[in-house]
Length: 169
Image (cartoon, rainbow, N blue to C red):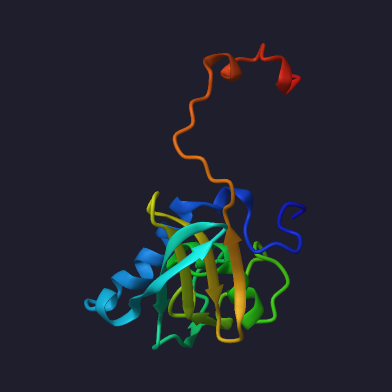
């Protein structure tokens, strides 16, 4: 609970893999999703670097009633199962904690996608997102920015040993 206090995500969920793992299933639900919801907005500059601006706008974003059917279901397990934003599910239902068990028969609201709108700034030279802004029905929900990004840096083998002095093992 300490790691999640006042946070939407844990450090394990920050990065490119997690972003792809939640956005792709939302898009995959619809056969024409890329043509309908994903748009190249134009070029921009962020942190002194040229970027493409991409918007994913789920115009059919909605919250639907969901009835808890299994013992042990929690916001975190439902969000993982349906590729949803845990914080959004908490907020929509005035719930207090991600792992709190929900009651069988209880009805809550679940969104039909991770976010209503996502804006990505993708560095032209690296083809990697450096800014991700996630919006729910009320406004900005999450923002992740990567500065001083270094790709494929070599880590000396000595740094991977328990004897490396800078790690103070």
